Image: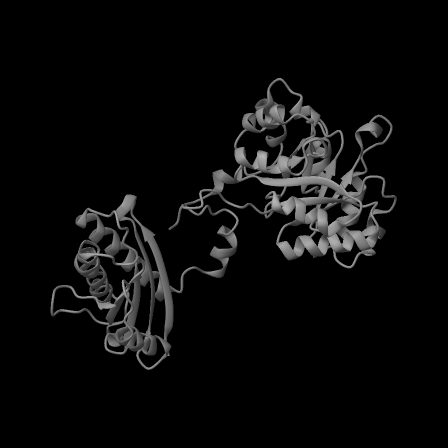
Length: 394
């Protein structure tokens, strides 16, 4: 019994084609749905058989379901004209080309959902776009596209064309996290706009900035950084779940809890971030035993920050050995390690050698006269920009 699914989006402007289809055996669920579709008519979405021309349907027999409500004869003409012919021709060509096995022509049926924009006018484009999209959807269905590897590789790179932005995830470290600690929204916006384009960049709404403007500042930053990973550095010490919700409502991708908080607070904080599908960052500033603290929690955070405070930079050295200790202790766990506090271009190599996943930099970049140049000083010592490795394979 065969039950395969295919999808394709092709074209542009009002004539754009979006095809969703299922293809499968007459004696299976696809066949049952096919028969039911032929006998259950709904206003504006009446099913119709695909035909190459009147009295000449292709095989496998194909039923077309309009996605957009057909309101008048103008809409009907597009469906019963170029769209109907395009789907039918694509099915017939797919059979001829061997995309659909010829010995299944009488055993399978196809249910094809077709999108026709009410403002579409060009019948040539309607036909060509829907023909190509149907043929591609059939090819994908028979190939069982996409593979799991393809999905997992592309899911955090993809930008939905209508949504217009992507929601990034931390899947390929190391990253450079820009700590926006300056308590001036006007200056912060200028800094963000001056940053170079790179998938290796993370933005952090610093604690002083949030203390001055509240969590609403996250929304302000999001307006000019729609596709950036945005961290809310709340350094939560109490009411963990409540503060996660505040940041989540302002579109934060991650929230920071202090390692000095009670375990109950941290546990609730991590539970709430996991429930909402965002990242938990645990800041270990002034925590004497990082590994012991992590082991005492019900669940690990997504990121642990090994943080040397600004006021102690002159007297406290970086403990790169702790990075190794954490990674060794929690080997095999999905736990990223960030380092923060006095990171400069002359010591970032030490952080990278220690296998730090996120390097947090503040003043060296945010107080620079040339934001882009200062940022590239760090990026040049990290792996190449992910954008350069993208290959269009659709």
